Length: 251
Ligand code: NDP
Image (tube, rainbow, N blue to C red; front, side, top):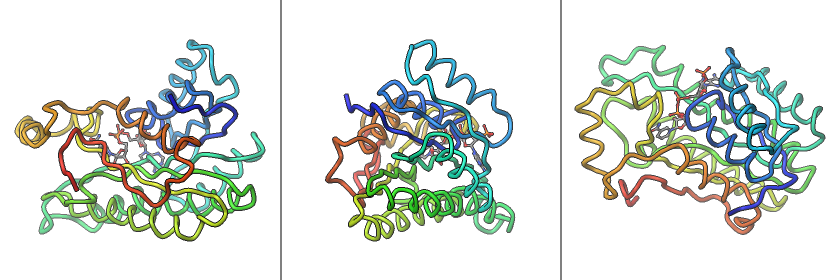
């Protein structure tokens, strides 16, 4: 199990779903976790309660920040560094969907998804990278999607943002490698969370049919992969995209 003892980790959008599980997993493995939420902090508080119950990660705390705002992301990174003195791991997880066929997709559907899923990661990464470059160490993990690799009808906005996130990952990985800062992406397949619970039964059945392992993924499956990439076990891995999809894409 990858050890994260002593590391300071920030997970965006960690109020529920995959982000909450990533925050919990990193804490279980010894990291002190900055659990980001944007409004209601009840989910972030539940993550902290689970960590306390497990008797780990006592200095972890909840941090407010809306990733769609450049100022908010800068403030979020400043708050975390002011509190803990360093920043070793950033997981850009916050994301939304506004699905619809291209011809019916509104400007707002497009802009809100690009703003949250792509610009948010850019704002957070830019602010965090300044800290990590000075430290000469760090690991950034971006939560993309298999949809960013292969596309999906009804998700032009989401696929564009997630493909953009892969471009961001590879470019920033090249820029920061000489400072010992690694940047990787994970491309989850179909993971059971509120996001996928909202899909119609037919879409769920269709997705299941395309998964070689014949089961949906759980947030734990993604969290374990994030913990690996965040840790020193992945010390020589940068600029990569790891699909966590039960054999869905083979991309
Ligand atoms: P959920 O909808 O369950 O959770 C999304 C989280 O992101 C929530 O905590 C939400 O906060 C937070 N969030 C949304 N907007 C912002 C914002 N502007 N600032 C800060 N936080 C924000 O989604 P999942 O857990 O399913 O998805 C997590 C990530 O994984 C996303 O990037 C998603 O695209 C990606 N992914 C998910 C897959 C799946 O099958 N579920 C597959 C592939 C990728 P709040 O609680 O306040 O709403």
